[in-house]
Image 1: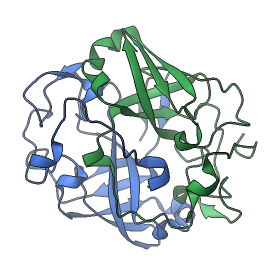
Image 2: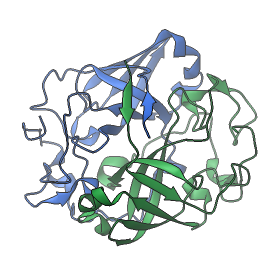
Image 3: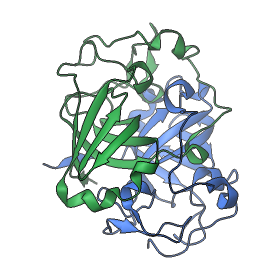
Length: 159
Length: 159
């Protein structure tokens, strides 16, 4: 069974290479980016601007192949790929929560981008704390991600 | 440009029809479900069990077509589809955060399911509060979703 999607637009960021990138939006320190939505979808943005944050679902277009177990950026042990956010996954789908600052026609200005320039965008959803926040959640092997995240940048291991 | 994925497994839930379903995990009140991962991906689950919550990315397989503007369950006004979580989207991709209670071989037991039985699963990611929680987020048109969510069930508008 194949499931086929078409990009609804493209994400523009300052990151032209997979090295030296922030590894999550919380490590992106306000880095600005732009979404160029295909013009045919502009009407779908009505009322999006009231949300301070949006969820982007996108395709890791530079990710080639995958390993079921991998050593992620924030640890030196091997973990199952589904217990990491590594881009080399059976289906290379990325998910990031970014700040929405401006919408004009089909162009969205966003902050805290952590994806490569030219990333194909598959979906935009409003981030809704009542749906998406789990205050009691525990982080498994990743016990103190906030400790190093702000200054951590990617290397070439997933390229 | 087409992007093609294959399901990594299937989500089993008590919901055989799109009517009367919870409309988000937070409205699912602990409803139990099961993920049947394809056996070939079992090694990818290593260390997932330490995470109390996981992010499921899946295909709305019963969603046929889309409208760019729609009236969601929690409001009586029209909004752009990207400002809602409605299943009829240009790319019918769903995202839910569920509780992970048990992993045995390729079978995962989960709680707070809000998707239809038989939903094709595309990806599993660990929910990591440091990445995924935005305490300052505002919810746009959806000002008080928590008010009715726990008792709200879907009707047939997206079928």
